[in-house]
Amino acid sequence: MGELFSEIAKEVLIKELVPELSKLIGERSAQAVAFKIISDATTEAFRKLGLELPKDACEVFKYAYEELEGGKVECEESDGRLVVRVKYCPLIVRYGRDPNVCLVSSAIKRGLIKAIFGKDAFIITKDHKYGNPKAPILIRKKKTLVEGDDECLFEVEIKG
Image 1 (cartoon, one colour):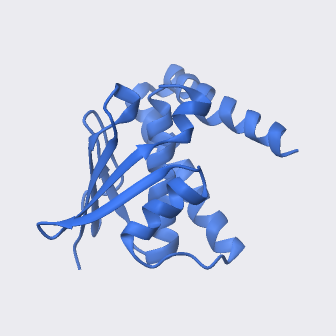
Image 2 (cartoon, helix red, strand yellow):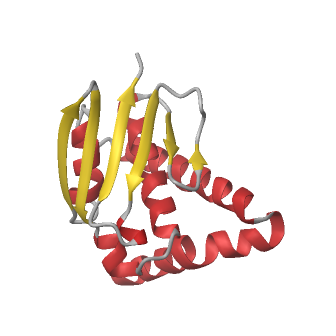
Image 3 (cartoon, one colour):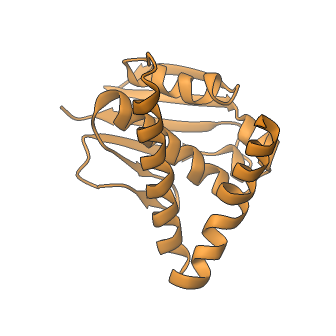
């Protein structure tokens, strides 16, 4: 069943959801709706499962990439911000360099943050902004493996 669920999830989340919604409401709106659905579903799933989850931002990224996806993550503090480097993202291996891989991954991270910290996150990428701009957690994606960079690079700022 795990393999079947994985294949369904791949088809729905990566390949079908945004393109099909785009036909109805346009690409930007489709991405925003998909982001909200995936993020909220992630938050709810983790709350229902009652898992013991990490309590700091670096551990959230490690959990999202290493535990859930088998990736490699490095974190460091720099100028009052957390800098997160993802050297290996298995979502790309599984699903290719489809930009929706980043949308799904970002939505999962936001959902985890909401489940763990009870706070919202605003995520800014080169081409998109997701979530509430007034959120107390700001995540800027500076580099991405999907676009051929040697890593995904995030800057995380927690306000209050």
